[in-house]
Image (cartoon, rainbow, N blue to C red; front, side, top):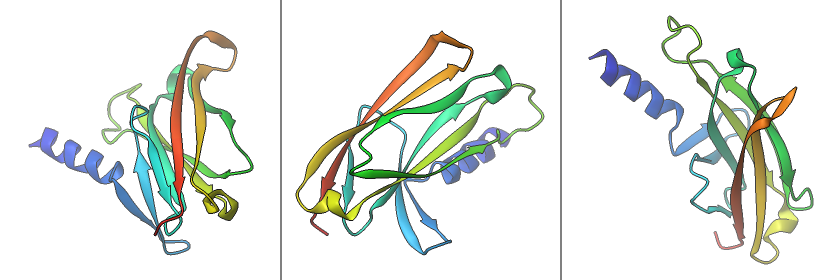
Amino acid sequence: MKKYVRILCLGLLLGVISTNAANNEIEVVFTNPLKTIVVKQSKPVFSIVLHSNPTTGYLWVLKNYDSNLISPVSRKFYPPVNKKLMGAPGYEKWTFRVKPSGFIVPQLTGITLIYLRPWDEQGAQVINFKVVTNNAN
């Protein structure tokens, strides 16, 4: 039963669509770098959620993105659901907004995030997300 509750909580955290209550926008959440992120003009906000464990010294760093098309909005760490497990990983949620100029014509761009210890880049993990803008609503 506990496992079912944890999976349910994780599903709620990683939900495909969530509401940003601060400005009443719907955002789409992505976790798989193998799937292209398609952002529509009617929903310009999207988030990337990744496993993270800052207790080991690792953190996600935004390495590369097209600042003419995309603006980073926020980054937030969510601790593990089961807080009794020492060193258990949580999640980082990176939120982005496609600028209005990104929807004039469909465009392809990318976001690169790196998981690393700031003092030791040798064990770094690089993840690239493809982002396509679509001016259709």
